[in-house]
Image 1: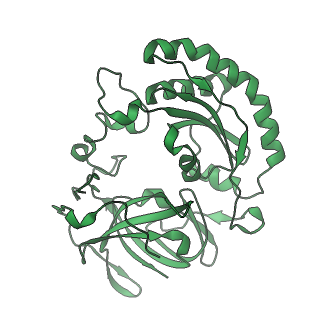
Image 2: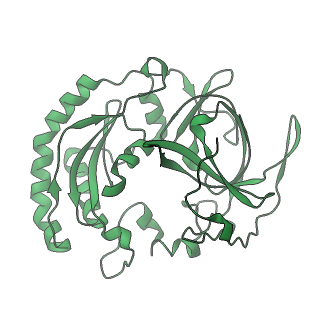
Image 3: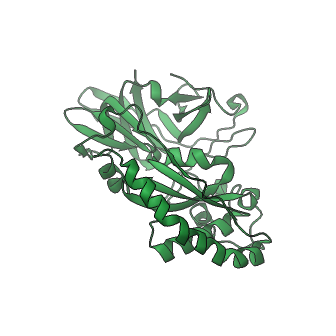
Length: 319
């Protein structure tokens, strides 16, 4: 079930200050002995796999678990959070405690290596005179994502376009245009959202709701055809502003709609998915993994947010 590690962790530095945490369960005392470093999709043999990467506090080693191969699991989650550190050629784990409402898995100091302002992780807010991060100046794509009958507009780096749509669990997607920079793509995304009243974010409860019926490909094709003309008009309208600010106008794509079929899910839908009563404890048989959600059964059907595990201490068993 292990997945090849992307980085060489043998040279890793870990000035960890994480305390030893134990919890009392019905089966006795359990140590929360693993620190979740990340969750995301990684490519292997031409396919994207959902991978959970953890640091074992006992063994002082990193493991990457391919969740596609997990049949049953049990996880207990500490509500407190600790910085996951920096990732470069020589990873450096941090372990500094994070403020309860801090939205990221890195502390401010570790984050500085990637972005100057924390809110830039979610929206490109800085100007060219303030930002020196190369990723912001790579080509970015604006897209439409379909979740059931919800249509969302978003943006991501062009080189990770399809991975992003897999991460988001979209049923279908459309490549709208490419923009020269992240701020340019964000401007186009917001303009399309405002003018056409399209969502820029889909809440998890809404995402779960869309899984309760089969995806209607006929409706999606029709919706795409109806959006082609107004979106083309909007991209053309905002083009001069993007070219003035970033030196290059956006390039319109709109080359069709692509479907991300619900492979592995019986009948293409799943009903009566609940939120667990205790969000800090999950156990059961894995039914399906889609984007950030793990659906499992244990005297009922439940959903767990995989993307919320990063930075937490956990006890994790699986088979």
